[in-house]
Length: 448
Image 1 (cartoon, rainbow, N blue to C red):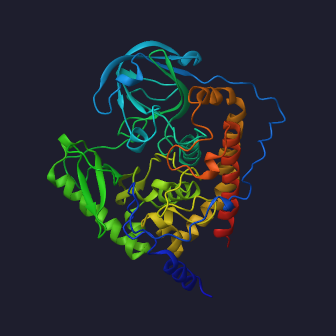
Image 2 (cartoon, rainbow, N blue to C red; image 1 turned 120 degrees about the vertical axis):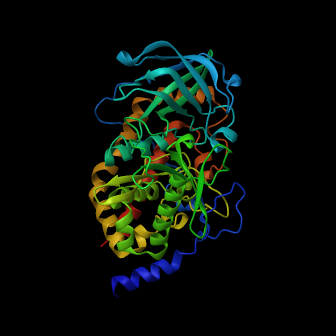
């Protein structure tokens, strides 16, 4: 059977799987392949991770101390405080003047008392050896991810694939607010245009300017600037240029350009897609989201950049963001029911990413890239998780000594396969096994 015929049959099987790509907290009228339960996981009672044959020294994570107590941190209002870094060697620093407020959507509303925060220093600051100084940094709580490392793992893989501007800064740290230890957090970048992060340039001419946009279906605030793309009216927030420097011409340009990309993706027109997007960045973006089976792949936290190149404007995918509900950690009955290591998700949930397994030319590039990275960057990411599981086990256990009502209990969207594991060591073993099974399934899916 000719490849084109195979692809057309494949497309027909799933092209309507997520018609409007919506992901409400209360799922409505969304179809998906036959739901599967915990039995899909081949080893529901997982053996412990093997210790590295070479001794791994016990490590201590750096500690961030925030002067204000957690209950006084507001979701939207900045509060004055001081921030210190300890146990970080040459990267430690004493009390620095800063402000703090809450951040996130679901992670703020549904994760209980362990909530994420955003830091803003009075002066730009290097953090844990960063190559750039910035005022704004994030502390991600990962409260619903009992491994505490799914987002860390995705950023680490992204860094191995394309560097710091694709896989954001990622450091696991202890966090104390006031005198109250709050657990292990992920210290990472603010998603912003900034030296060392996303580097773009505004131009007065909309056709020569560069733009940073987010595919985001969360409710918009009055201060956010959105355009709505395609027949499904996918909402994109314009993050750069800032609202005060956006003209009507800039907004119209972004709207027109993204609609051109959307039309090319919907038509599955390789030539049109190749003329508008940076295919290598999209291939890696698709592979990471699909390999992690990221719940939000068609809903929110998807970032793109319109950059000026020698051949005109192109849409680049990334940086990566927000993977706490991924790699088997979440289930949403009626919408995201298949949290197993098998089958597709990102290609179902996102009609742009669908092209990378349906359009023959893009599928070939995606398969080739998978075979290039599976025994290198992907294997290195999994090995790194096994390493930190052993090296920082006492630190992870300290987190769950503080939150002793978490492991072994349901929090939010946790499938039984996660809830039943009552040690962090077991959670890490489960995650590593999930990734190894995912690799096997990817090999079969992308087989020549």
